Image 1 (cartoon, rainbow, N blue to C red):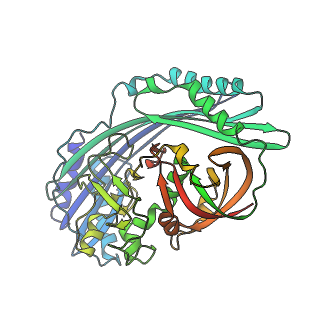
Image 2 (cartoon, rainbow, N blue to C red; image 1 turned 45 degrees about the vertical axis):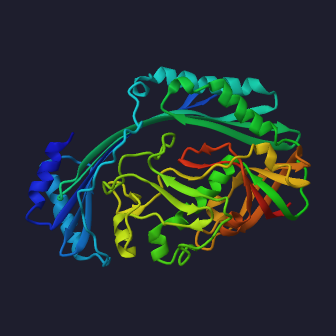
Image 3 (cartoon, rainbow, N blue to C red; image 1 turned 60 degrees about the horizontal axis):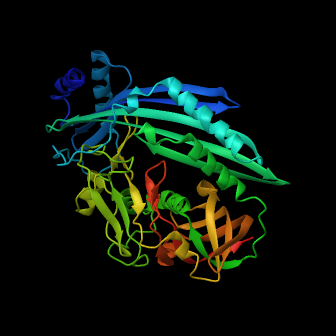
Length: 443
């Protein structure tokens, strides 16, 4: 697809740029939000653009357009060449014809694209209806949402690389608010997938309501240090918040606490953290990254030892290593680094075993303030939390909102047990529930 557009750009640039890379993105998305069985929001969105990255006299320039015609294509090449003159980045960029991976990935479903709008609306309405009927303490369903998206990417360069990929997915989530006396709590559950037959509106609604109502009637926890279980969703949230510390670009620029720690033990030997763009169940799965570099599986931490950072070809060349296939850019942006399917490897324990290791354990089931309360450079965090108190392995009661404080590397070192209840979140960050020796708790 789009061979004509790419040929126009290559033909015009061949005598002007030393090398050129073309990236085309075409995405469309749909979302419906229901409130009181009415359609509160109904959105279609399309995003289509083409960008060029040129190398001229060792310097790199970018430009892009959302208008697809010959004159515009010529103008973005001229603009990229002009931008290259003023770039201050002196790192060497080399384009290559990277090989393809040798496996078939399940990233697109024709059947999913056949699901009609009315079916999606009915599903979202059903979630709201089931949630309201589940428990009389539910007083509001602020979000009952069904959405889906399809994306197409094509990348080619002057070294002969020419790759394309089409992906799609659907997702749904429902948020329930419940109240008992003056105590109000929120709960949310979600699903993301390519098989709409596995989407269960009643199950999603009931899980969301249970997450909300189970927190009602919380008691104040006395401040101190406690053993803590971060459930699988909250451990994934912590990983997501601090995933940037693994970026080689952040390390090279002195913005990561992992600088200088490669090859060193930075976590308990039970901790293995992986970035896997080939994972069969992840929604960051892909054939290639934003440079056309082939996808791979990368162990970042293996049995507690820091083994690798996330690289694009530019940072890899600077560190004299191979790219990990984590080059990332949209058609409007410059080259960066981002994870694909990023996760803590699951353990062998059933979740209930984690609560039996100490007389008192606090389970964390909700976290807020991730942007303001977590410092990705120092690794320190102070976050508002919700959860439960366990005594001798039994859940005693929910807790009023409290604060947890610590450091992400210390948390990794204090991991004592990892459960087998692995789950990806909607951003393809995954984890199982984790028992941490202690965290500071302020009630």
